[in-house]
Length: 442
Ligand SMILES: *Cc1c(COP(=O)(O)O)cnc(C)c1O
Image (cartoon, rainbow, N blue to C red; front, top):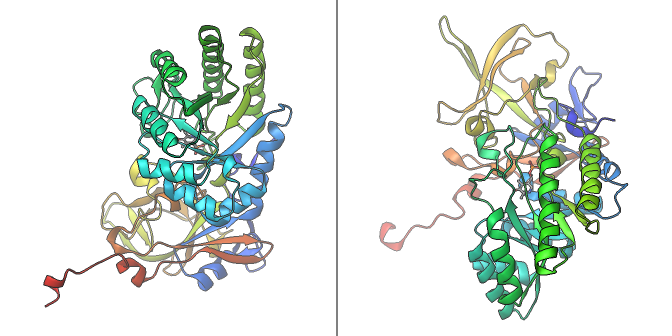
């Protein structure tokens, strides 16, 4: 069975009677007219469908917790939809914790992650009653214990470990290999457990956590990861007589950015993960643990597209044709940061045959601000609306105000209705935090 992360476009994408691309029952050319561009569009049906794909895929295991990795896209409306679909939240900052809290999420379903959480952030997490904290290093163990004591609380924690698994993804999004900035090395686990059992009385260790990387296509890495986590749990039980009841295997399932990408489905990975988990719990003779998953990209990416308006174009004599859009690296940093590839269509010429190969450049002052290299499109004219697919994850969440350009708006579409879920920034938003000291005012 397929799952939504295996599609390039949102489920509701189709050509309408005007020959335009329609998403969520809304004509994308009209969306661009009504809300301006660049515009992030999120298709609610696609988002809810992948949530159901995840839940159905893992339904045979009795104790699974899905925790959406909010860093992929964290807005209050997205938090509401995911919470409604039964997901908890993996958060990495006070900003994300505050967003889901304000959205009305049950804070017990929230996990706080990160390799350098500040005392202020840990305090906020405890104040708002975050359910789990994944502790990354020795410094944080002692800091968190101190803060928990001050709050007169015992905090449930996981230990983030580095399982030493290489996966074939971009170096910057690999996290599980041995020389990583994240987590305890396997050889440091015992020392951490001893500290928790003997010294840190306000910490309650409930399980182990690992995350091996992102945009993962090879399913075998999950097998290796589970083997290591279960083996460690059995070893800790034997050595310390401590029964850990949770394993968190992180996120990482890939999505289809271009026709060349063939990510596995949620159903494929579920079968591999659950078979391996059952095999390992028997082999190492432990109680089946609660299984926590933290998918981010695969949950939100496909439901998002970005609409841009085509502006200037330039033919380099005997070279490429560049076409510029009204956004770029500030609303989608991934091409310039990781060399990430995307697919696009002209929304108002959705079915026209491609006639030319062009390179889509952004409007920001960096030569590296190129969104898509060498893409074949129908004849492009100024004013056309370009739709870039699969921009739901790590686009808005990494957006900046580079060049002092206001961040785009985001609309949620469903059954022909479009609602703003993030307002477009204004020029006054751009200067809102600026101050002029008195001595410069004369
Ligand atoms: C980023 C991250 C995730 C989500 O990764 P995706 O590739 O977006 O699924 C999950 N867990 C942790 C700890 C992460 O850092």
